[in-house]
Length: 365
Length: 135
Image (cartoon, rainbow over all chains, first blue to last red; front, side, top):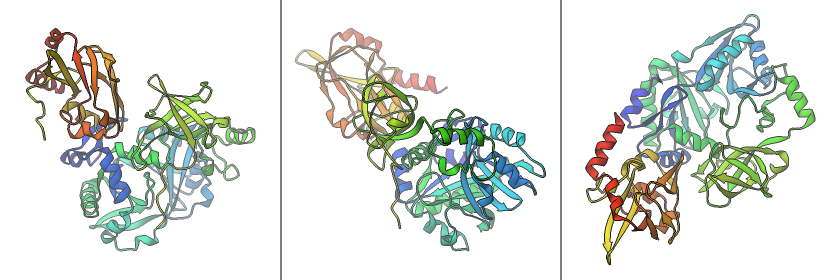
C-alpha cells in the first residue's frame, strides 16, 4: 500500500488505517467519526489529503490544453483563482471531478482524486496540445486541509498576510508557515469555511504537527476519511466513484453550473449540448429517510407505487442533522422536492422523501 | 470501563457475547456484541433487533447494527425465544459503544437447549481466536 508523508503521524495518533484506493489512510482517530464530524462543524478539522494528485500544466499552450480537458470556462479564470470542474469523455460521462487553479497565464494546476490520478494523467497527456508540458508533481507535493468555522482564526497567527483577503476559491502562493513555503487556497470538501494548504512533501509532517497543534487550541482535531465522507455528504458534495462516474454526465449530476457550453471547446461538449437540448431523463437526487433506516451505496430506490426508480450512490447518517440522508439517480419526474420514495434497506422498504439543496448549510457570519 | 472480555461470558467467533443466568429453572441468555466488535464498527448509529416473542436460532442472523460507515449482521449465540429487548438502544445506540457488556446489551433469550453452549468460546478461547485473526 502507498503511504502519504503523514503515515507515521497517523499511526502515532492511534488512527485506524484502511486501504483507500491503494493508499493507507486514516479512517478515524480514537475519538471516532461522529466526534470528528462535530469537531469540524463546531471548530476546525485537519485532514491529510496528500494522496490527492497535483498535475501542473506549464507553457504558453497550457490554457488551451486545460480548456480541452475541462467543462468550465478557462478564459474566465484569473491569476490566483480556482474553479471546480469536471473532465468528460466524448460521451459526456465524467472522467474525474477536479479543482483547477490558475497561478499564471502559462501555469495551471489541477488537483484530482487519488484513485483517478493515473487514469487522469493518461487522459490529460492524450489531449495535450502544443506548447504545454504536463507534470505530475503529486509525489513531491503535500496537501493538508484545514476546515471549519474556526479555521481562519486558528490559521491566522501562522501567516503574515490577512486571511480575510483570501476569497473563496482563491489561492495565495507566496506564503510561508514556520519558514516552510506553502500555498494556501480557500477551498475544501466539508461545507465549512476553510483552507487547503499545499507544501513540499518533505515539510508535510512538520506542517501537520503545527496545524494539529493550533487546531487543538481552537477545539479542533485531526479528521479521518470516515468523517470526511459524512461531512461532504451533508454538504451534498459529490464523490467520484459513487455519485459521479464515467456513465453519468455533469448535467445529470446537478453540475450544470460547471459546464460552460458556450465557453471554450472541450471533450464531451457535443454530447452535453445534445443532452441539454433534449433534456436529462434522470437526475442525482437528495433524499432524507422518513422512517427508521440507513441507505447505503447500491441500495435500490423505488417510487411511491413500488416501481424500481434507481439506486443509492451515497448514503448514511447526517450527524449534524440527526437524520439519515442519501443521494441517488432517479427519473427527473421523481426528483421533485417532496416526492415520496422508498429505499430497499436489506430487504425492507423504508420510506424516504426528496429534498433539494445541501442537507447542511453553514450559517452566514 | 468494564473488562475487555469478561470471564463470566460466552463468546462467538462473530463477536457476540452471551451471559447465562438461571431464572426459575430456565436459562436466560443476555446477548450483545464484544468490545472487539465495537472497536471494529466505530460509532453505532442504529440497532435493529427482533421483537419479544420472536425466536432466534444459534449462528443465524437475529438483527443488524449500523455504524456510520457500514451495516453488520448480528448472529445469535444460542437458540431460544426473545423474552426482552433493550429498547433504549432505539434512541441511544451509542450505549453499544460506551458499555457493550452492560447498558449496550441487545436481547434476552430463554435458552431452548443448554447443550448449545458447548459450541461457544470462553473468554480465554475468544481472546486466543482474536490473536489468531490478527496474525
